[in-house]
Length: 179
Image 1: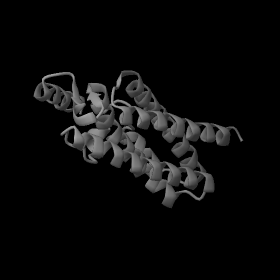
Image 2: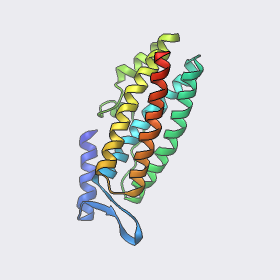
Image 3: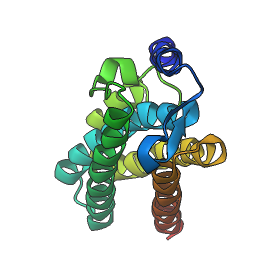
């Protein structure tokens, strides 16, 4: 996945003849960091939505169900926003390939997902919250990197929104785990 991402981004740079895309007709420029952020965050979000969907049906804990609903709803909208950016930069939007996604940095492994699927009851709820917390922390790290290295105003704003919303969920999970 990493090699494919690099090829796509380098192809983008070669086609444009510079290190940024966009910027014409008043549109803010985007650079490699902006494209990489969307190309990595979309599969990351798909994976979150996949496990949240399972949590909404498997868990009996209202807190877990509420967290799953909140994160899945937010991330579905963010996927659409990032997909719009990628299309405007003439970059193919990544699909939802779970096998490829497991190999990307910051993603849950197939073993992590299988453990979630086989757990039940309180064990499931605890494992879901712990797994989701690790996953969201990696998303926050990706968003911070995009804010530090990106140029596209919209992409950087989205990264900031992700940092705030996912940190809020992480804080809620931490409080629940302490109670």
